[in-house]
Length: 254
Length: 196
Image (tube, chains in turn orange, blue):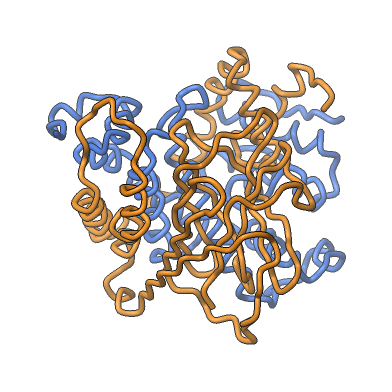
C-alpha cells in the first residue's frame, strides 16, 4: 500500500461524516484517525454540521410504545444476563462457554424479539440452529425455489476453528452478526463476511475488526438466497476471493 | 447498582455511555431519552414509514445497550455515534426493502437505463432520494451540494457511487460534500466549488 498524504486523509473526512466511504476506506481512515490529532480536530469541527443536518430533519414524535418495548427488552436482557461484580476473573472456563453456547437465547440474543410490536410477535419465528461446518465445501442441498421472507430469527453458531461463537440475527432479508471470543487479527488484516449462494461464494462489503474484548458486530445487508455466511481473515480492504479458511461458518435456515 | 435518575441527568452523553457499557439501565434510559425524538425523526426521514422507523430505532438502541463500550470518543461525539447507528440501520432496512420490490416506479433518469438489473436497488433509492422534499439547513445549499449530501446521508450511497451516478469526478463529489458541510457548519459564506 502506498503511503498517503495527510491531506488525502483529511479530504475523506466529509464523506466519513456522511457515512459515504466504502467499508475498506472507512477502516483505513479510522486507523489513521486513531493516531492523528489534527484529523480528529477537523472531524470534531465538522461534526456539528452533521448534527445540524440531523436536527433539522422534520421532527416527528414516535409512539409511546417504542420506548416501553425497548426498555422491556433491556430488562429481559438484564434478567437473563445479570451484571457481574468486577473482578480479576480468569478466562471463561470451557464449561462456562459451553453453557453460554447452549443457552443461546438466554444470553440476550432473543431479547430482540421484545423489540417487535405486539401485533407482530405472534408471527415471530425463532430458529435455533447450530451451524458447525468446516471448510468452504458446504452442501447447499436444500436450496429454496421460493425465498420466503425471513422473520426475525436468531441463528446461534459456534466456530470449530478457535473459540468464536455468537449469533446471526436476521430481520427480513438483512442480518446482524454478533460475535464473541473472536481471535485478534494480525496487523493489516480485517475480518470479511462471505455469502454462499448455491455453489458460488460471493464477497460482501462487511469488513470489521474485533473490539478489545473480542466481540464484534457486523451487518449482512442482503441474505436473499444465501445458504451459508462465512467469516475469514483477509488483507485490509477485503478480498475478491477468500485468501484464508473460514473461521466461522453459519448455515442459514431455509 | 444503577445510578439514580437525578445523577444521570447531570452526566454528559459520553459519561452516560460509559455507564451503559457497565449495563446501567438508568443511564441507558437517560441516554435514550436524550435522543429518542431525533433518532426516530432521522429513521423516519430515511424510511418514510412510522412502523419501520420505530423498529429501526429500537434495534439500534438495543445494540447500543449490548455494546455501549464500543463507543470511541476519538471518532466523534456520543450523540453523533448513536444517531449514526440509527441512520445506518435505517439505510440497511431501506436497501432490504428496496431489494424486495424489483420494479422501478420512475424511469425519468438516464442513469437508470445504463445500469444492470442487480443494481436497481440503488437506483430506486436514488430516484426516491432525489424526489424527496429538501428541508432545513440543507435546503439553503446550492442544489449541487445538497444533492450529494442527501444522496450520501439520507440515501446511503458512497461517494464513489454518487460520482458514478452523477457522472462527476470523485474529487468534485468530495469537494461538494466538504463545501456543503462547511456551509451548514457556518464556516463558509461563498458558493465556490472544488473541481479536481
